Image (tube, rainbow, N blue to C red; front, top):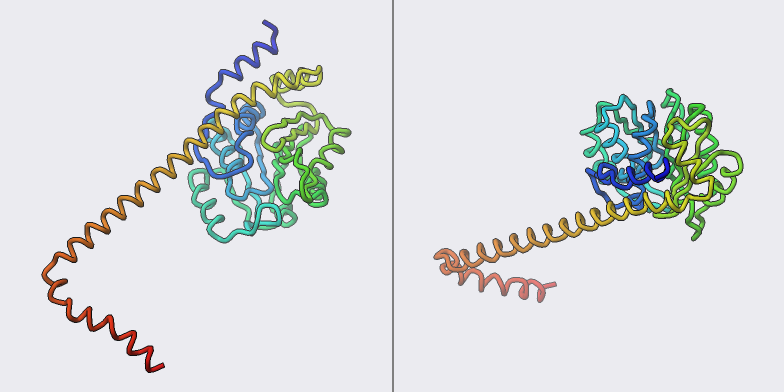
Amino acid sequence: MSEIDTLLKVIAEDGWLCHVRTYVPSAWIGHAPFLRFLIREIRPRIFVELGTHNGFSYFLACQTIQELGLETKAFAVDHWLGDQHAGIFDESVYQSVVSHNEQYDSFSTLVKMSFTEARAEILDTIDLLHIDGLHTYEAVKDDFDTWLPKMAKDGIILLHDIHVRHADFGVFKLWSEIKKDFSTIEFTGTYGLGVVFLGSIPSETLTLIKQYCDSGEMMQVQGVFGALSDGVLQNYRYTEESRSSTAIEELNITNHATMDELTLIKNSKSWRLTKPLRLLNSFLPKINRRDE
């Protein structure tokens, strides 16, 4: 068995890559195994996410950082108001993110402001940057160009939705430009994920995978991570179904309890004694309406 075949077999059998602690609705779920793999390989000192919304990818990164015991500082940048692609959402989304962040607050910072404002707030050089904000060509190009000078010379940038071509999504246009100037890997599933290597690849394993992809075997790599992603997506569906079943069961229990309480009330002595008053009360609205 070749070196790359051995490596891909090890990755394919690594159940840790599929472990997700916090599931929230997201278009990012299918890329979870690769993000965990990437963070374990490069062990970033500074991780920044632009566009966090309800936090799936960000908290997955935080979970990975915590489990590996890394000294990474993580920053989630978002004004948590929504946009034309994510939709407009209320304060409850941000409060949910704040609640999830409590378990990571020793190394994770929520930066509630625009991407432009946040650039001056994050003073450290960034090793891993995830861009997932407004997806028009103009917006994502501005994000890439504005934050590129903040990156470490061997830093890595992730771009989501590189294969979405409907409405005014334009990440695919920027991606076609980036591939001409930088070393990259791309994943086709879950709307597409682009991996941009700004300098030397800071991992022997990633270097080997990159060489394998460049030799025309990208489909092999896609297949391994795709199979892992299927496992994560199935776990998500199972979790959502369990939540739905629990919610229905709780509702049924509540309804049964309410009906039992109502039966007890109707069979009580006080309910029978006040029946004349209830009958009189039922006529009062009609009398009032005649006077209007």
